Each structure stands twice: as C-alpha cells, then as structure tokens.
Length: 331
Image (tube, rainbow, N blue to C red; front, side, top):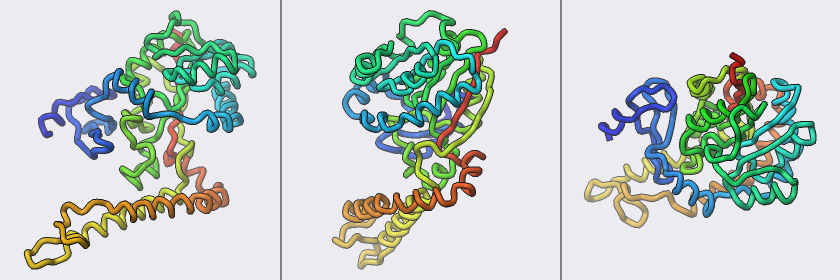
C-alpha cells in the first residue's frame, strides 16, 4: 500500500503521493498529500461504469418531474452570467426537465445523456435534441455553444479533466460553464465521514472542494467567475448530527464488545465468538436507519425554522453542494 500511495499522481495538482483514507463499497479512496483532493483508485473502466449505470443506478422519473421550480431556478441563476441567452448544452441531461425549462426561457438547447431510457424520454416527451452518448463522443462542432451546464455529473465521470477540456473546446470565447458537485469539505462530510450520503463509490469517484474544483477548472483553461456552497439535496445540519451520533455510538459499542474479558483474555461477542469478528448487527443497524427516517421530517422542520441562522453557514462553505461558474476566456 505504501508503494501505491507514493506512486499516485493527483488529477488536480500533479503531485505524487496520496494517503489511503477509507475503503467504501469495496473501493479505496485516497487523499492527495499536497492539495487534499480526494479520489477513488483504481478508477473503474468506462465499460465498468456503463454496466453499473445500466444495471444498478437510476433516479426515478417522478423525482425529476417534481423539481420543475428548482430546474428553472438553476437556469435563472446561470443567466446572471449569460443574460443574452444563446445556445446551451447540458451534460447529463437525464429526462430533459432542465433543458425544457431553459428552452421556455429562450435558449436553444441540446444535451447528452448516457441512459438510453432517459435520453429517449427527453426526445419523445419534450422534443429535445438529447444524444445518448458520452460528451467525448457527442457530435458537436468546436465553439458552437454559448453556455453549458453539468449538474452533479462531473464526479461520476471516468476522467473529469478530459470532460473539462472538451467543454472548453465546445464553448465560444466568453461562453459560460456551470457546475454543481457534492462538497467534500462541507459540514456534513466532515462530521459524518464515511456515512456522508455522497461518499458512495462507484457512483461518485472524485470528491471536490471549494479549493480543488476551481483549480482543476483553471488547469483546463477556464476563468473562474464564482465559487459558492449551498445545501443542495443533502441532509440538513441536524440530520447530519444524528447520523454522526449513530456512528459514534456504534464505534463505542464495538470497542466495549472487544474489551469484554473472557477466560482466555480475548474479547467476545454475545455468542462467544472473538469480538474482532463482531459484525454490525443487522437488527441494530435497521433500527437506527428506521429512527433516522422517522426523524427526517422533524429535523427538516427545525432546519426551516432556523434557516436565517443556518443558510449563511451553508453559503460560507459548509453546504453539501458546491456551485462553480467559469467561462472560456475571450482572448
């Protein structure tokens, strides 16, 4: 492992050397020793990722259909940087709701989407030009877009640097790129660690922060316009605190079980097996997950009631969602 850690090259800063921090879902996550960028290694192949998204990963159509106000709000936010509209590309267009919202506001739109089912829905239901393809294989000419959006997609890709290089080429000089990704430096991520909802390889392979994402964009040739953090779709502060409490209590339980004395001097579980092999009891885990689910409405109510206090913290870097706008330089 030490030799592997020394040999890893960071995608963001090119430094050699990273530390293995956790293994999650069978995938090892490393942190760059120089800039702190976190990433999965080895990266699944494009074929492995295509198989995973085809067989094991999907977001229900109903969820997208309910988010019409949010989708339009994202387009309105983009227009702060491109008020004159123009031609818009969405990478990861899904079922087409964001592009439909953009078209209703005067944009000419196109998109790419890896899911054949979602792309077909976007074409048939909304009449959108959404191609079933990866961005790197999409049939677009260089410099043909005035803006591009990539909402929670970059962290899923096989090679984020290649995606950003391609986007720079597709945008006209002055063209704007909007990115939304999970924020690994958020309050929730720091508090709950491996229990953070977005720490879920192989769905997420790259874990960006307000420092590392702008640095990767700048390396690709973009000019940074804005970096902000928001709550996004993540849990509220209070739900994060409950999740962290459960993790701490389970860690304490396991330590107490391991330290239980026996005649041979080894800790044991309740059935007499060595405590080192003590798994997380399924019944206990399910009970805690059920409690978290029942607590969610109450923590959401508390979050709404304290929004004037919490929202400034989320915008100051604590939010689970990282928002970044950049543009292709004019010269």
